[in-house]
Amino acid sequence: MSHVDTEVRPSNFIRNIIDEDLASGKYTSVHTRFPPEPNGYLHIGHAKSICLNFGIAKDYQGQCNLRFDDTNPEKEDIDYVNSIKQDVQWLGFQWNGDICYSSNYFDQLHGYAIELINKGLAYVCFLNAEQTREYRGTLKEPGKNSPYRDTSVEENLALFEKMRAGGFKEGECALRAKIDMASPFMCMRDPVIYRIRFAHHHQTGDKWCIYPMYDFTHCISDALENITHSVCTLEFQDNRRLYDWVLDHLDDFQKPTRPHQYEFSRLNLEYTLMSKRKLNDLVARQLVNGWDDPRMPTIAGLRRRGYTPAAIREFCLRIGVTKQENMIEVGMLEACIREDLNDNAPRAMAVIKPLKVVIENFAEGELETVYAPVHPNKEELGKRELAFGREIFIDAEDFKEEANKQFKRLVLGKEVRLRNSYVIRAERCDKDEEGNITTVYCTYDPETLGKNPADGRKVKGVIHWVEATTAKPAEFRLYQRLFTDANPASAETVDEVLNPESLEIKFGVVEAGLVNAPAEQAYQFEREGYFCADNKDSSAEQLVFNLTVPLRDTFA
Image 1 (tube, rainbow, N blue to C red):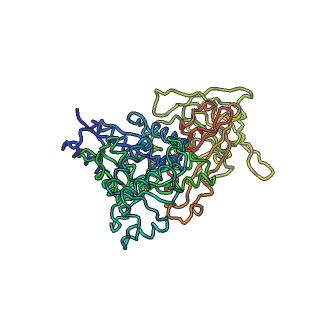
Image 2: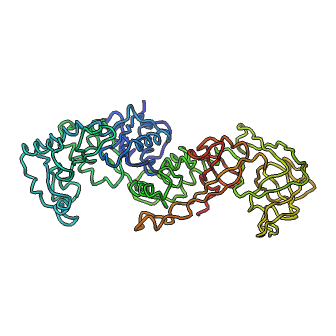
Image 3: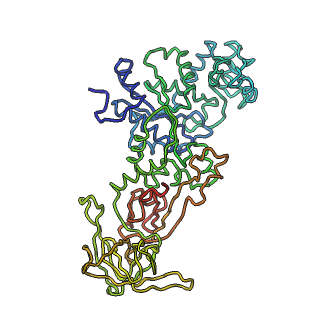
């Protein structure tokens, strides 16, 4: 059986490496992992990594683990764990076996730290944070050895045990690997591999007061799980040397099939922050309404806004996997969801800025049923029923008392077609004291349902509408980009590039059939855009629709 899925997919340098490794017999199968830290919600950048790691496992008929890098209990939370699990599954992927946690290996990691101490390759250091930075050197100057670097093995074992038993304060000391303080790579200048934290852990409770560092934990966790290809982003490129050093000096991993790390460029997307720390700051200061605010680039936010898993997977496929850093146009992401919804979203009518229209030659108190396609290109989906009556709502911007020939909507003395319904003619209008139009009075031609106007009349415009007595009131949340700068990360503070007009709320009506619109199901509101019912706030009693994306790229 072939290792590779028969579906043709774009190749990249990681897949080329895997092909070579399988062809040479270095590995007999492929095993990847996705290792998020549960200190925030996943964002669109993580989606790229999810699609890459789980996609490789699927295409090569291998396995992919979901492993939580939970070595920093002060910033982690079980809510983040649950949200990450939900995001991975929502994107269409399933991890191999049980969920893994780095904390599952705390006992083994502690043992491997002791092995390094016994080999004279780790020591307990009492330099404080400022002294450690001073001794570390700079990019141009080598560091200098800690005065605790040559402590005996026996004393280091006793000191590390005292750390383990809670005998030192936080920050008083740390366990460091003994590598090379003159290394040109800062990560190799005797990095800390264990530090003291008196913090409750969401998996291990209060069992530990020392926690391993990521660079020590990650490579060992990969090896324990028999990962073959450890794929991460380019900022960890230098850290690959530490990854290899740790595995090179532990007896259990002296084998050719041990894991190897490979780096690819992270996703940089216009008008988007990819820092969980900065996103967390927006949430903490209530500049957005939580991690799943539809303006956020989190997977939960995109889901709430009506983005589909297929659109996000397609976006990740299109941007590809390279080692070159670049900025992706946000229009590419929006094009993916727009294409998906154009093909698949059911149609409906909503009036966001309602203007009352009275059709004077239609009988009072009567309703007629007209029919419209659920999707114009999918007859198999059938038709939906629409009520038509004497009073309807149209969009306020679709009527003018006078207009030039470029305005192809409703004008006094002229005709327009109501979408999937009749041709109407505007006769007169009422205004309030400020001169605002409140009601338009029209007549309709009962011979124009479902066919072109009779008598050779040319009706150029088509507008959307909703029958007034059956209409359901709805709140519409119209979203713009959260940031005004294409590269918000370059700003000194997030506040100076935050878009004060990123959310506009309007109140209008939708056709009656949307009263039970499923949450997250996107609809094309004809002539308005793609919208979905909010997955938190919308109900049959109070409909709330989020703008997913306009019908066309309005920012181009």
